[in-house]
Amino acid sequence: MAEPFSIAVGVLSVLSTVTKLSIQFPQFVSAVRGAKDDITGVRGELEAISVSLAKLKESERHIPEIFHKNIEELLSGCNVVLEGIYNQLRVIQASRAQSWRWTITGRSELVRRKSSLEGYKSALSLLLLTCGLYILLSRRCRRCSGPFPC
Image (cartoon, rainbow, N blue to C red; front, side, top):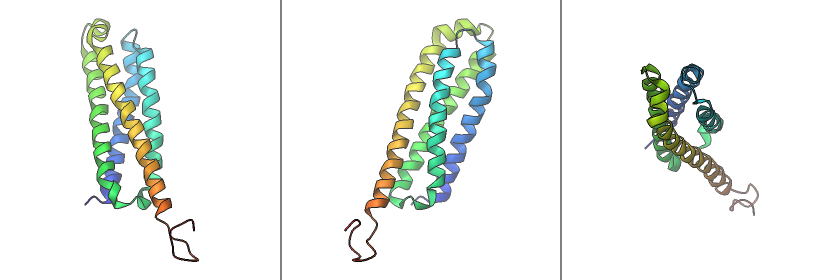
């Protein structure tokens, strides 16, 4: 059974990787010509994921246990994709033929990973919405002790 502590660790892990990427983006864009538009798209996904993570962190105590494992798996998978992006950009930036390598393989790989990030972003948003609905529908009416609303 998952504990809120492990959700908090997952959120912090993803936020840590988001921060590493945010620091790396300007360096990468200045080193690799033609990467700005692609990096801007990934940056937008990172901002949306950060917003969802902030909401998750705020409501962590109220999330039913039934969702904990799903959230942990979602955070873990998201972090794997983010680490992949980070490592990919590091490798390309370290190579001598940065622009060439970016054009040949880097751009398509980043687009594939960005698509995965979009999926994780959507899944995280849906999971938060589902948790909210679950909490709302599981409340009891104070007057009749029946399901809310009565």
